[in-house]
Length: 166
Image (cartoon, rainbow, N blue to C red; front, side, top):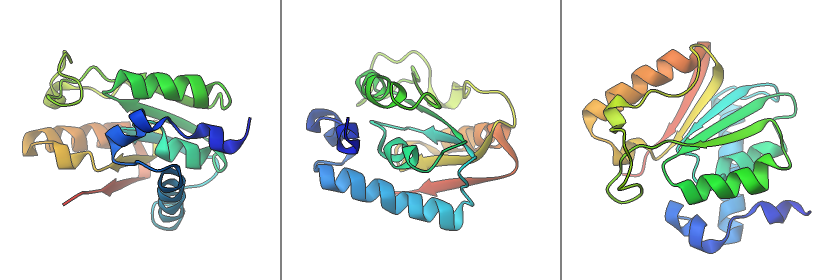
């Protein structure tokens, strides 16, 4: 299968603000460049992608994380299922899981509040933690909680790469 088969259907990608295949790829590779430049991402890094969506970062990282690992979670089950079926199938070091976090728009049946969600990983697991526009959707107490979770799961000396939509 060609690399471009790793682009999700428009009905899923649009949930995450990307409506063109070329944008999906271009944004992912631009962020990969930023991660290597500013977050000290290496080919053997352990990466956590908080709010991984339909795998925009994961797809770009498949060609880079040769000896590394990737974990992503998101609140939208359809996006996670697509990633599991299309990315994890071909890249066994890439894993995706649903976070059953309540969100009025994206997961209204979610059972856990953001401020109570514990990232499902051991302490000091990741070299790089990525959050693309996640804090845009959270209240201050939720941001504080997420920052504490990031600090818990990130290795000593690790890097967190956060983007915001203002």
